[in-house]
Image 1: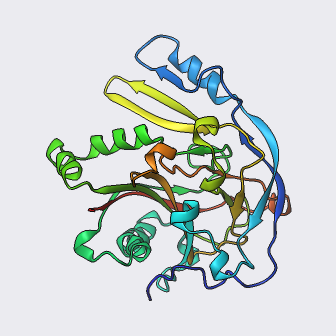
Image 2: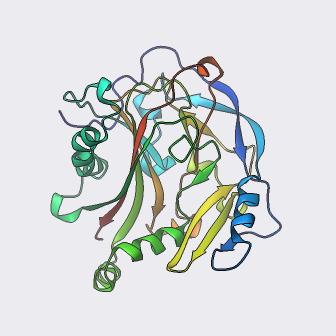
Length: 295
């Protein structure tokens, strides 16, 4: 079966809008933060900055109950839900990493192609650069309970330069190729605890809300983003999100006019649903891809 642009279950049941809190960053004195790990004291500075957070009460709206015309879309809001059944996958296999990779990684290009139906296969290229299974309550593979994005525009292009040859990068520039970084996120079993919330990019003011965090190492640098709170932020999630309900969200987009508006790096966070705090840890898969669309 092929993926559908909207979740089959979206109109089932009553929406569960959640009153909860999210962890943001306080606004720093400067518009960006940099830590150079080549210098003494960097680890201490990193740990100090990681501890900075402030909680703000928010309402996170449920996409369930929305008509198809009301659903968030990749181009308008920066994220989109898709229905993608995988009948050969059994939720009881959610701890078998090799099987998870076998079932889901090969589907990635097909999923992305559904988002750009006007492009033929030859015109659309997809490069998987990472995948990660979230499966713990604490530790590196636990859900991230702080509002963030995986890239800034500068960080995205820096990461791409680490993956491609200079000749390939030159070709992308010469062909005026549109470049997107997408996160393809799906549950490995129905999500109850620590669901994923996404902020409508149209409610973000990048110059005010996005705080670049650059980390410099001996062999290069990377740049992610923390986020300062604003009452204008509009948050969404999918209650009881199932294995066949995928959400795809932008972490970068080089489309004309988008770079100037912050590159559409959709901010997101896990959050506490008070009804399900006693459930088992969330198990989910996220796949990071670059997408290339020649203009």
